[in-house]
Image (cartoon, rainbow, N blue to C red; front, top):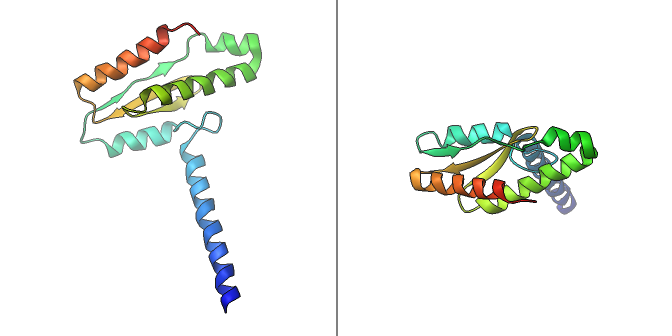
Length: 130
């Protein structure tokens, strides 16, 4: 009986982990690891009674980066921008990927002051030469 319980426990743990992995893949971009459009829209709906800042940002000249330096370089740019946005905005909310080179910071419970702070962070980062 002890071995049967152990096997069932292993199966249960494996199933729970597989479900968590599946949920993560469904709601996150494979390349960047950022929350995807679905996750962002679900989050926005869940926060509906509260003010939220959702900004759509795209990476300037992204197509020319892909065309000139190929897809690996473009992938690295997406990953880098995703990390940068996640790091800079972690105190205010999260960043997600809407699709392609479109990224979206989302700041829950964001009243005017917080909205201006998130906007200032995005603008400051955009102005920084890389």
